[in-house]
Amino acid sequence: LPPRRELTGSDPVAVLKEVFGYDAFRGDQGDVVAHVVGGGDAVVLMPTGAGKSITYQVPALVREGTGLVISPLIALMHDQVDALIANGVRAAYLNSTQSAAERQAVERDYLAGELDLIYVAPERLSSAQTTSLLQRGKLSVIAIDEAHCVSQWGHDFRPDYLALGDLAERFPGVPRMALTATATHATHQELTERLHLPQARHFVASFDRPNIQYRIAPKVDPRRQLVSFIRSLPEGSAGIVYALSRKSVEQTAEYLRTQGLDALAYHAGLDAGMRARHQARFLREDGVVMVATIAFGMGIDKPDVRFVAHIDLPKSVEGYYQETGRAGRDGEPAVAWMAYGLGDVVQQRRMIDQSPGDRTFKMRMGQHLDAMLALCETVECRRQNLLGYFGQESGPCGNCDTCLESPETYDGLVPAQKLLSTIVRLQRERSQSFGAGHLIDILRGADTERIRQQGHDRLSTYGLGADLTDQDWRSIVRQLLARGILVARGDYGTLALGDPAAAVLRGEAAVPLRRDTIGRPAAGSRVRK
Ligand code: ADP
Ligand code: ZN
Image 1 (cartoon, protein in one colour):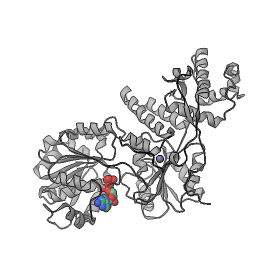
Image 2: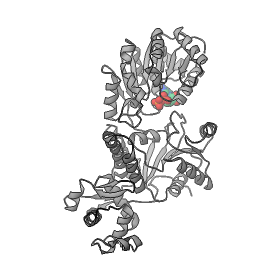
Image 3: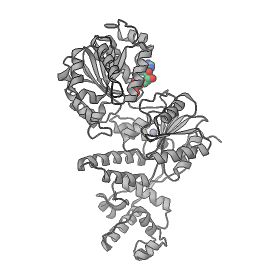
Image 4: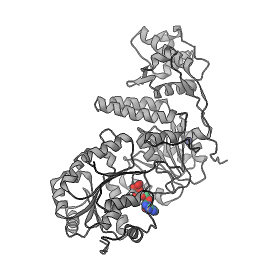
C-alpha cells in the first residue's frame, strides 16, 4: 500500500488536484461530491466517460473511513485499483480471483483502517461473512456502480444486485450512491426503488455526445460497406467493430486484414493471453481496428477511438448507446456507424421467441428491439431519437446522417397493401406461412421452382410488384416490421399481419416509407481517394 496521507476533512477540490491531478470538477461532479461528503444519498446518471468514478472516490478520501465500491466487473476492478494505487490511494479489492492469504491481508488492512477504498463484487455482499467483516470496520460511503444491473427488465440484469436493497439497514448512517450510464425513465425509477434510495438526490447529466456523428445504413454487403466506411475516415483511425457471433468476428477481422487494415479479433472464445495481447495492441498502438463481440469494451479507457461500427443490430438502445459511447472520448470528431438489414430483425425476433424467459420477459425484450428499430428507421434526427429515448428533449443536431442528408420518403401505402394482401391470400388458401424471400418472389413475379410447385403464379398478386427491385421490397418489409404492421414468427421468420395491418389494408393509415440510399456516404463526411 502507498504511504498514508491525512486527507480526512480536506477540501474536495484540493483532493481532486493533489490525488488525481485535475484542476476542476466537470459537470455535476462537484455537486455530487459536496452532497455525498455532507452525508446525503445520491443517484448519479452520467454517460460513459463523464467521470463517475471521481464522484465516489473523492468523498471516500474526504470522509472518515473506507469507501466501499460494489462493481460487477472483476477486470475493471483490477484496473481501477491499480490506477488508484499509482495515484497514491490506498485501495484494494476482494474477489474470487484472490488466494485466501491475499484476502486475509486485505481484510486486515481494512479492519486496521488502512484502506481509503475497498472494491467488492456484488455476490460477496450476499454473504453474512462479508457483511460482518465490513460492519467491524468503518465505511465512509457505499457506491453501487453499474446500478442498472438491478433492473430485472433492463439489458444487463444481475441477480446479485437484488440483495443490495438492504444496505441501508446493514450499514446505517453511511451515505449510499447508485451510479449508471443507463438512464431510461423506467430504469431510473426501478433502481431508485430496488436499491432503497427514496431520500437520494438525483443527478442526471446530459447524455448528448455532440462530437459523435451517428450513421445507420441498410445492410447489403456488410463487410464491403464496412471497408468503404473505414476508408472514408482519415487514414490510421482506430476503431471498434461489433459483431454478434464469434465466427463473424473472426471472419470480419480476417477480411479487413485482406483489405490492408490492421484488424484484430476479440471474443470470449479466444484464450486469455491472446485477448490480453490484442487489447494491449489496441490501447497502445495507433490505427488498430478491434473486431469484437460485446465482451470487449467495458472499462476500456482509450480516448482516441475514432469510430465504433456495428455490423449486427444491437439488442437494445441502451446497449447501442453504451457501445457507441466508446468513440470520441477525447471530444474530437468520431463516428458511430451501423449497417442493419431484414435478416437482423428476423434473427433477433427468433432469438427472443426461443429464449427461455417467460412471457413478460419476452415482451420486454421485444420492446427493446422495437426501440432499436425505431432508431434505425427514423426519418428524423438520430440524436434526437436517441436522446428522446433517454428522456432528454433536443432539436435536430445537424451532425447525423438524417440531418446531413434528409432521407427521401415516399407514400408506401400501395406496396404495403400488395404485400399484406399476398399474405392474407396465402393464409386463406392454406395454413402454411412464408418468409420474406418467397413473398417478394411472388410480388416480383419470379419464376422459381417453389412458386410453380405451390401454384403461387396463379395468385392475383403474382407479379404485381415487379416495378420494385428485390432490395426495395426488403427495405419495405424491414420498415413494416419496425412498425409492427408485419410480425416475424418462428424459426424461419415467416411473416404475419400485425395489429395495424387491418387499417393499412383498408387504406385508412398512411404508410410513409424512407427510400434507402445505399453506399452513398453522408454529406460532410470525408472521403479518401
Ligand atoms: P465513467 O465511469 O463515467 O465512464 P470515468 O470515471 O472512467 O468515467 O472517467 C472517464 C475519464 O475522465 C477518465 O479518464 C478520468 O480520469 C477523466 N476525468 C474524470 N473526471 C475528470 C475531471 N474532473 N477532469 C479531467 N478529467 C477527468
Ligand atoms: Zn441529427
